[in-house]
Length: 442
Image (cartoon, one colour):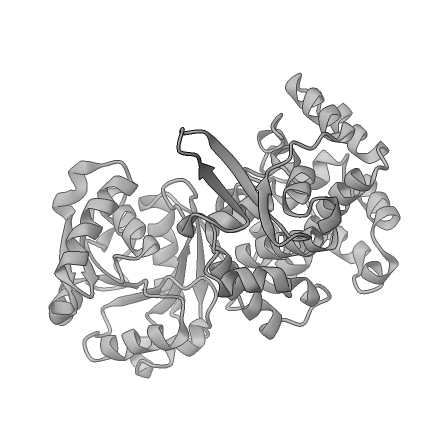
């Protein structure tokens, strides 16, 4: 394939690491939306054959199995030579990805497009394995999990990436794979995870801070679905996996130096859980777990930080939550947000503080990593299914109201480290309707 012929020329794809969750799901996306023949390369044919079944299930399309070809590393060279695009999706480990790239460097030519699905490693560093004539064909293509439901795709060029090729891939991702393609800079964790895990990890820190009030389920109740997200933040961490959470925030702490750096420090109790294999849903126990008695009675349990044991989840009752949810039920959004602003309980104060800090950090990160005014909005709306930051400003009655709230409710220490007026001077209207995200759900 001539890489300058356009996005519609991608007919054959090789996915390396196709038995992993993302590799498997992305194979399904290429085969279904892209109608591509996909070589699913795994360490054994047995794993590859199982991955084919899972990939078809991931996009709910059994008919695409004829597009999915199981393969192992013994035929990697043939797969690569036949492919227009090679997508690396091995473990999120620099050495593992470098090892794959060294293999690929033996087989690829200047007409191959090479992509990495990394969620935050340096694209420049990964590209430098290849000869200079190949580096221009290398870029990051970061899907979000599960890609069938979350349509964000962050596209990350390095300083070597050919701009014409990049534009063709953006067109392919947008028009063929039907993703929301967002160009971001080659920075740690890129944009979506940087914003999302800043919020999630600070929520985890607050769970430790308020462990005597209940900890994990206490904070999740304060920051539940009614605050503009599809699931509470610590439920999200459990869904992603505490090991993945730790890998993301550790990299951000090591490689960033903005005002929120300390919010990427994972609490000691959570590190101990990772070390003990309590990772979340994939291990049937993490911040939360489900217990089923012999009689079949199910109990949702939560890790109690104060006592270092699991206990049953508490159904907390906070008046501000009741007021907001009841107002959302009848579509009275103005009343709902006035309830939040005017309630000065500890819980309501935590809630509004997190919403304000979420917007401020998103705007700050967007200035550093995004490439357009709406980059942060796009990544949070389509990668996390959270109300995007510009829409939160609209929900809180516009820029001037938001600015007054931020100056009133955020700490002087934080305000002294940012230029709030500058950050808010660059905002515009969101293309997303905040009412889609703030739901009458606790």
